[in-house]
Length: 122
Image 1 (tube, one colour):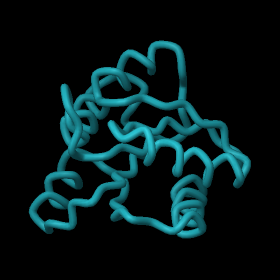
Image 2 (tube, one colour):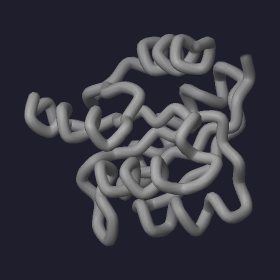
Image 3 (cartoon, rainbow, N blue to C red):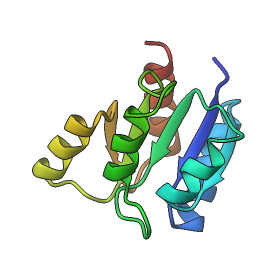
Image 4 (tube, rainbow, N blue to C red):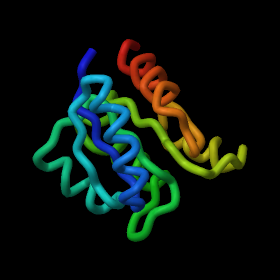
């Protein structure tokens, strides 16, 4: 399944790595550099999946997930958190906010695409 994916990460390098992996798997990718920028981007883009970091300026990933789950049309869109944070307490905050899944950086491109396919096939 080819999907529209929104990547939200303040690191241009991480966005490029995620974009590369997903485009090679046939997905279309849009980028945002933080949660505020992501919400603005969603005015014009309707993703099938959102992948977000946790630690970002302006609006962090957990707050972004919470905000999106409260918006009409977004409760069903899967949101994956891709972060260096491995703390169980933070993972629980992500789950409670409404995140679909949690992946840790660094990641292997084939691992990322496998998780994306699994989430999209639900």
